[in-house]
Image (tube, rainbow, N blue to C red; front, side):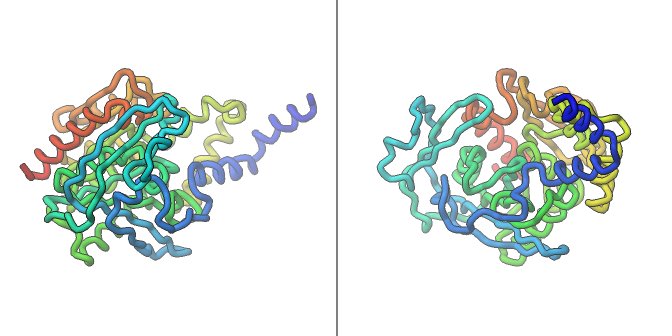
Length: 350
């Protein structure tokens, strides 16, 4: 046992360890290049009017799966369920889906009345809703309550699975920069299909918030963003997560630095290029930051630092009793009101 411990610690100081660590970071939360089934199965799929695939030319090419909810009257509500099977009392599961928040262990239902896809109305704007790292629109419906509220308020809601996540292909994560480029391709596709209605806003959560904030600074079509649980930098996020991992803590500083260098080499750009503070300072677009006061993945101090960069152009809302994104469920009504009022104001769609 003692030899095994010594060998493990020794491995942490050799150059090859940085390559192994970089491999782990670049595939952290990804689907490993094996996308999930593209069949229309899973919680909440009955809410979507269409699903499409957008091809991004890369080496190899990446297929982004895009889910769309058309604006239409949807009477939906969230219910807390203590049952171990929160859908047991739903005879017709096309009328609801179960949502489990891992952080709090809370189980809730998102329910809706029977839908008629022919009830769609002319959209007043387009809003992209971006999942967190490892998220899958089809089977991880944490953001569906907010998405449904936006569609019910007249917006076309577009929910792409980012590369190497959900049903999309790709062996490695886009590490924000490539994700922003991919989102730009989705916007291009929406334009070609004449689906880009009105002004464009983004609602992003965690990894999706970072990607959404980045694309907003690069793409003039995006007018405003709501960013929930967004990290400040990827280096800081990895270091924070690593501080909770014994092997990462045992690494030498030099090995950790080689790990970040290896990540940059593999991605083709410096991963320190993503710094939310610099991004928000480079734009005058209005931003709404939402964060949990008890967030253990992305400490609230990171969001506060982003806010201090441009306090006059950023509204900062903290749910003190919430962790990483669980406010989408525990404060669903407040999140709905925040998003609707924000987009109505900044997309000029009263």
